[in-house]
Image (cartoon, rainbow, N blue to C red; front, side, top):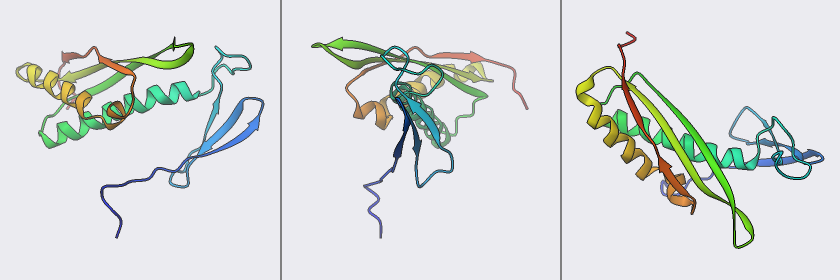
Length: 151
């Protein structure tokens, strides 16, 4: 029986040419092209880079953490959009992803739940396992907007 305290996520990278490769997983149907970002010699414009994927990991973990908390709390919302940005900088002469800024926009239909919405957004940031696993500073600039229900 599998240990519920351990989970494995398998990724295969196959080099294609130059500084471009393909990422795949035996657990997933889709492949994505990955490359060195254009800010570096030989980098490629318009292709997912490790830096993009790093920021995407934090941002998507935040989203999945929020949806889990919302479901557990029986909190309904209209939409959630998470804009995110990663800042790479040099520390001790080496590049690191020093900061990630999450800008979630949560739309709700009942203004009386605005404070709860902010609490759940903050909780999602705190429980995100990716954020807890990295040394980058992660800051959140959350917005909650009340909208007319889309029912």
